[in-house]
Image (cartoon, rainbow, N blue to C red):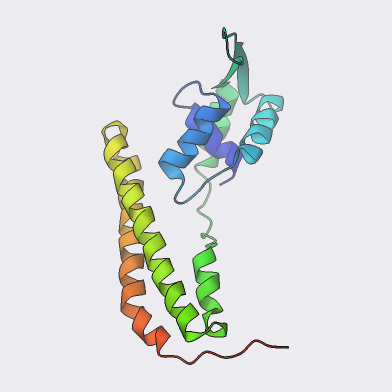
Amino acid sequence: MDVKTIILGFLSYGEMSGYDIKQAFTNSIGFFYDASFGAIYPALRKLEEEGYVTKQEIIQSGKPNKILYRITETGKGTFLQEIQTPIVPAVLRSDMLVKIFFGKSRSQEEQQDLIESCIEVQRQVLQQSKTTFKKLEANFDEYQRFCWEYTIHHLETTISFLEQKASALLKQPAYSVTG
């Protein structure tokens, strides 16, 4: 699913500014789909050009004007069509897994640090996710709750897997990557 469709989904809940949309990405689906301002604002411009959203400038005293975006009926129809399309297999992009994949090129000490760092980062993300979930869960419907519980379960499983496999990985000798 692309950024434009997700933005339409967020706007189906009500008017939002670009900042609000970024917060929605970060605080609701950021674990499995995030977008930067550099992706959100061009998508909003394109959605407006296509007639899927409208915008209204709110004049504010003493601070920059606020632009609120609203989904149109055409935008609602497009969003509903898009969420009916077949599910595309996930493409996992993981900095952690790439570093582990090439871990044998590190010294034994560096390998140990890498695995410990991976576990620690996953623990931090898990704690942050649990904290955010507790803070926001009263506003979730059962589908949103499912996604958050899936995220927490995924993180817990990742930590458990890393802890179980760490000793076997660290028993492997390192090799040199010299040219």
